[in-house]
Length: 249
Ligand code: 13P
Image (cartoon, rainbow, N blue to C red; front, side, top):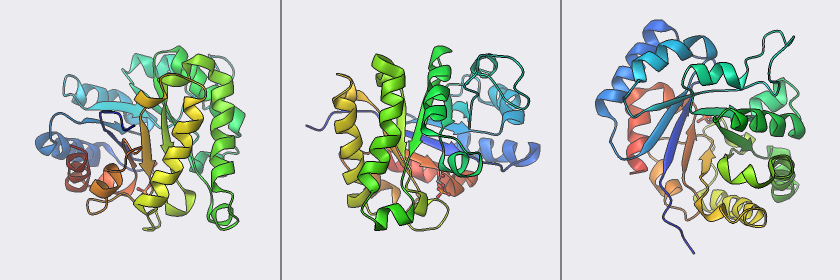
């Protein structure tokens, strides 16, 4: 049964931006964004404090792109969930495929990061997704289920509090979007897996990410198990991001 879940659109700025560009981008989004759709921007760590000031009471939420699995201590370069909380972060992306690929993040590290975020009241946006080789080998379902199962095992009943983002690696930054049917099929698999773990699965937010653009967002978001998007490149242009948020309205 299709549940009435509210949509969420999250911009992942990745390692882009500077003071002037961020201010212009946020002003553009705030000026034109439709009300009534939950939206957020996940920005590089150094800009969190100024983004928190700009977006205070705006209705547009903000988050980080990573969080340490550790509470505190001798972890040079890491940023804890407690620190993020001081900046009013609502979300932290964890397990993005770029971090899995370039920073060696295992399924367990990703799960531990999700747990650390939740412990401080920050909603982790847990990313899962297969590579092109894995899809071509028919392993998509097994890969995403393995990635999610470690998070389910680690979080227990708290699994109902996370957001999951399905981001096929082959669709990220490539202009190749999963078809609505391909994306929906994986989302249905993920929701069924969540349903076996929590009674809250039907209320959980499952985002799709990977070359979401203004012209493909509406059809993706209209799929029964797709509750919005995690947006990379198009989140860096105010008009495109706003159009994608509007597509979720
Ligand atoms: P693109 O929208 O640029 O494909 O990036 C998707 C993504 O990785 C969001 O986290």
